Length: 380
Length: 252
Image (cartoon, rainbow over all chains, first blue to last red; front, side):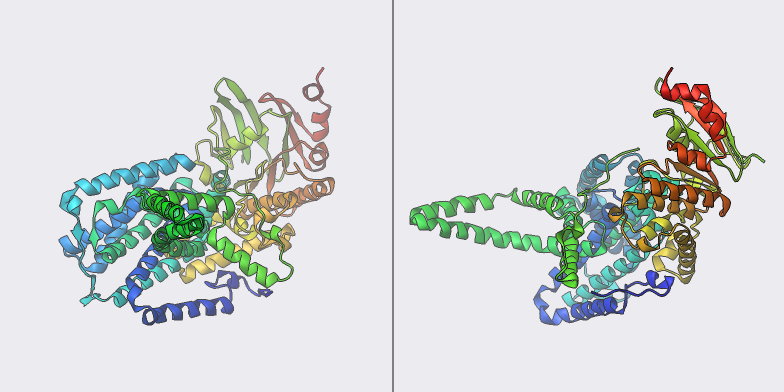
């Protein structure tokens, strides 16, 4: 076990805890730079993980740090994507400017959505954001001048100051840069008074207010910042999928984002990234399981004879190919994590790390806490 | 100069008059205590002073300024800090982060600076840290600096909450039952700290308290309430011996 010997206050303000930790992150960066030469065929999929990372970051600020759970983040993603594509392609603005404006527009919408958040708390706010997401989906479908409606909209390659990014490799690095930038900015904000005010609002509104935190201002700011990040993610997302249609930005996508932050671990930036990796891999895992699970069952039941095996195989196969199964699986994972690992993958990671650093003195009670996901709504 | 004055303070919740025409004045440097049976309206008065509730009637004057309509988040910057009866700390943050939030009223940075972590913000952060460290030294919280609140025992949390209030550099400190849930020894520590806060830091203390030994030990003036109305005011001894107060606590 290592103890960090602190000799100045400035040490607590550093981006990384110590040189040791910094070196690990440098190693990770080197790994990410080398990754394209290892898996050149999957770069566009890994770019999606980076974009999801930005989405996770966005919802983590709102849900994990400020305690405002939103089910409308797919709508912000959609607004960012459509705004960017409209500005970039239809109005012919420079790529970067289009992106900044898209982020600003999304932040503006975020502020408007955030306004009721000043009066609503907990589940009521979540339902309000859900309603907002449904409205935005209708708007995206019917505002054909901007969105081209259900016919959809093809997205050109990004062209940054005359440099066209037409390879998967270029796009991979573009997304990586934006994710790293987003992480850096968010981390800065979170170790500053603004970030502390957000955490304070999450843990006790009344105390935050009495310490001088303007609840309305900071909640609105959290919404705006979260939405702006989502807007940037949306712009990248548009280029990643190359074709925009309103039915991409459904409530199911919002649930996936929520899944990301809960599964990753509420209240940690690591969690947002872990969650993004998990959610990006989930469809792959589900489709693999769709093929594998019926075979397993078939093999297991063929012990009772070939007919039984075939019958079970067909029954299970029909069940797993039901179209509505995925939302169910997402919901199930969400519930299981809240019940059994409220700290998410990041919490599990911390436990494993602590286990090894304390070995053989680790006790299970080290992480025993009250299982609370949102603070009870007292004194409001 | 009027330091702090409540003038005919009243609030109704529906038909219930929780506080009904309470007036008192706190002199600077005093420890002023409000006592009363459960439901007498003591904490309601605190919530009125920290502007969480809107008074139905009456006025609050702090340092010659009418603060009756000041929004609640501006109260801390005016120089009034408070603690809560059922500890309201930020549980998933460390003690240090809690104390640094107490510095929020002194925040001068804007979001852009913070996003980019400019040198100016770093300097201000270090100043906040130094102020928080002074409070940590004052209340002997060094061993807990980096612990999460959820991992701390109740007695320490009580002290951390007081520390957080002190970090705002208040002129008037509102302590809502500082000794509730503490053992005898911790209550004695609390009495010393309240005296130190008053004498060494020069902060005026307005407190709600049930423990009469603590009240007698530290209070300069005591106000007894019952059913939202004032019963008696004076020194701890005078109030304790007042027949109405005895009647309110013990019955006829």
